[in-house]
Length: 108
Image 1 (spheres, helix red, strand yellow):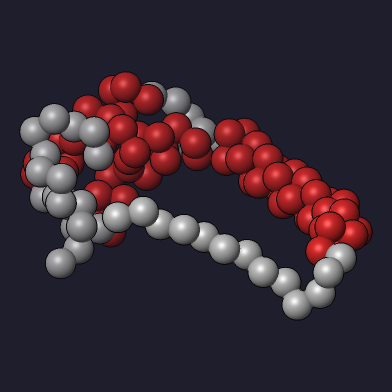
Image 2: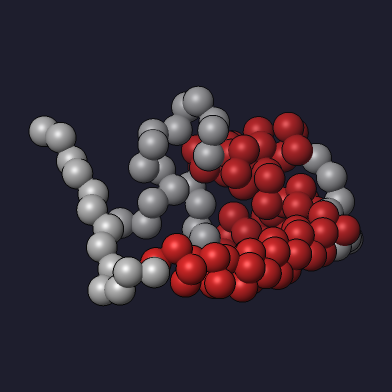
């Protein structure tokens, strides 16, 4: 099946409107990118005093089972560090642990 997308406008001078609005859109995108960069920098620079303790708190909070705890431990071994970003990366890495089913971390 072939999909076709059509765009129509109720007036003739679509191009002028696009060119007039485009700089505003770029400004908004630029501002959002700066905000996201700042937020990323905060997580990269924010220190965590006891990362392993925080990871254990996370495990308890989300009631992770033994398999999931092993995955998080494996993730920590890959991502060790004392920043908030390393903690987030630990959890992301844990989801890649080979012995887990794809739906392990999904709350049903």
